[in-house]
Length: 111
Length: 113
Image (cartoon, rainbow over all chains, first blue to last red; front, side, top):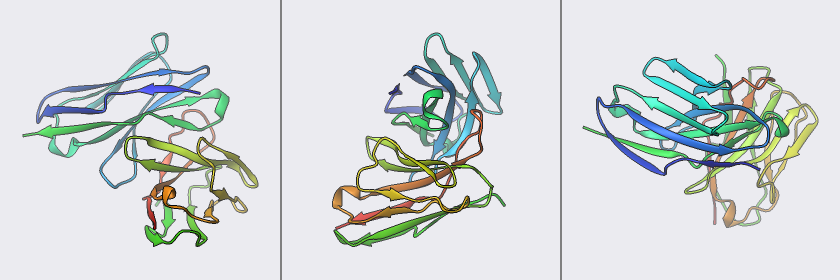
C-alpha cells in the first residue's frame, strides 16, 4: 500500500505564493499527479511528475524528489479562484494505472 | 468534446433498493475507475477496469459491483444500498500509459436513508 501525506488546510493571501507539500511511501513509484478540486466538483488535472525536478505550467509549478518521497505544488500570484482542495496522487507500478490519492489540502485565499 | 458523463447526478434512495449509477466516456479509453469521496477520507477507489470484461477490486469494493461489457460504459451497481454508502461518487477514465492523467466525471451525490 501507499502512505500519502499532505497538510489538511492552508491559508494564503491574494497575490502571494503558496507551497503545498506532499510526502509519499510506495514500493513501485510510477508518477505523481496534482489535481485541483473545487467544492462539489470533479477533480481536474494540474500537473504530472515522474522524474526529479521542477515542472512549470503558468502560475503553477510542481516539484518531485523521488529519493525523498517528496513533492510540492507551488502556486504563484494567488487569485481568489484558487481557493480549492489540492490533491496529491501517486501511481504505483504494482497496481496498474490506479492512482492513490492523499486526503487533499484545502487552500483558502483571502483578500 | 472529450467527456465523461455520469447519471444520475443526485439520488436519494432507501436502504435495500437496488440502484445503478452509469458512467460513459467518448475518449476510447481502456482504463475506467470508480471512486467514492467522503469528508476527511479523500478519494478512495472502489473498482477499476483495465479493458472490456476485465475488472478488479480497489480499496473499498464491499457492497458494490461493476461490469464492463463495452469499452465506453462502466456502470456501478449497489445491489442493496446501506446508509454507509451515502457519498459522492466519481467515475474516472484514462488512456494506457503511466503518464496519462485520469479524467473525472461530474460526480453523483448519493444519499441512502
